[in-house]
Length: 284
Image 1: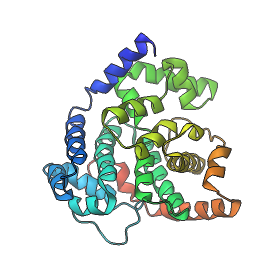
Image 2: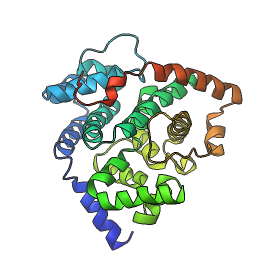
Image 3: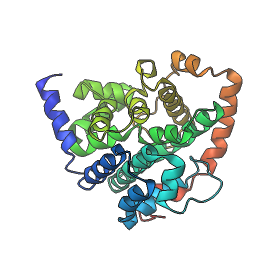
Image 4: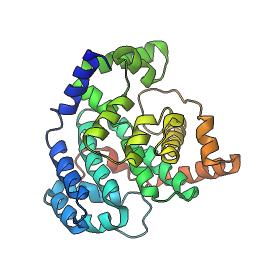
């Protein structure tokens, strides 16, 4: 890693534009690391912020988790989903606020769509803890948000290259930064001590064959990212639809029939998404 890249990493990890987020994540992380911590104790920490807890509950009850009944408390969500998922949702709510306020609603829509499809894939393939796969998909592009906040001129230059050269956003990022939004996501996953089941898909969703610690989850997020782009649901930074990684398909043992079923279910799942999730001012 070059000295310049180290400087960029330190700047990003300080996250001056996300002042409330690191404190909440750090506090939850410390609590979760203790074996004596209960779901009720973590729930109380989140619930102290009424707006935050309302938004987390809204995400828990969203279509991409597929619970038939309503989850009415953070503690209930923690029991059903686990600490890792709820921790990821706390992160997601803060990122959502920034996306909406900074004119990135289409990127949030892409992320929500990706989470919905990832959940469909995970349940179709009988993946344990499919909610964690959905959460990884919801967070997979948050590095793009951070780059726009912390390095806005360079991020704009990457977007311009996408238009001029008609290349994927991650290739344009490499030209400008010599790293991508996935790299940024990995840095912050490490800083916030997110589990590998979340950090690996965030880091390797464009290169699933490189994922060693959570290869199936990464392959599922990779596939959902491509399918949602093909559907044109939201906007992930470019209009190009990449080829599905063959290794990912083979590792998931997805046949053409299974893929067809996923696409059919995807259309229904996207129809169930509450469109008000993509606008400001609605917390519940």
